[in-house]
Image (cartoon, rainbow, N blue to C red; front, side, top):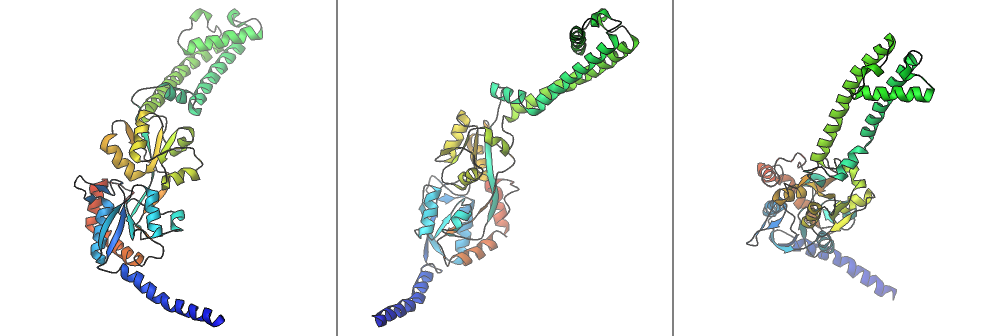
Length: 366
């Protein structure tokens, strides 16, 4: 029995080099590769004639030419399908906007990264003031701070005038409550330019304080009005979301099964899931959500195609991302493809392709 087990072990060990050689041979130069692909413009999209185009597709064609591989595309519908197909060996390579993540690295391999970007946030362009925007502005800390400062100055001026006038001026006389209320009321009317001279301070010191308060109040009201107008105008143009920190207070959407979903989960944000980027942007335009999170270059391209008058992309990004081709675990293609990618992205043709598909994107460096 022991002899039989030993013989079987020797046979198995002897077959390992042959199996590895066969695996390597199946992906050697001249052999046809199965390339998994899904539509994710502008990195991969299919024309009316069925031909594939896009930034990742152009790079793959150059890499396949350099390594001497023939290939055929296998279209897949979702990113989870792409990851499963690559990890199980159903495809030899998966291309498109595939983000390198630690979770994916556990079940498959990646080539050298060829594109660096980030998770973007799309928001509505607010063309008219609404109650939500107005309420958010009026309840903001800066607005409340300005109101409290204005009230404080008014109370201070009123109490100071009462201290100087309470014995010489009947209007500010009487008990403390009556005197202070009358003086604060006077300072409020003075600030709004509605006070009457006969009810104003009568002493020299009182009138000196009154003159100073009138000048200060004019400046204060002007600054306050300009500040409120500026904030309301900015909110009208920018909307209620101006940074990623605002995502915790609004309805957020993303594409299910993607790295963007993982970014939101890590930040412990609640969100709505959509099947495609187009579905999410339509919901954003309709007002069912207030922000949509996904890969920044994909969002920018999709917004330009049909949402540019209603939606916009925030300048900042949530998380950095690196795109690469996905491979089955321990694929012998990893090194030759990575070398070919490094060679391709150093050429002028790669810079021209980036500009053609993405425009002048400062985050698109490899």
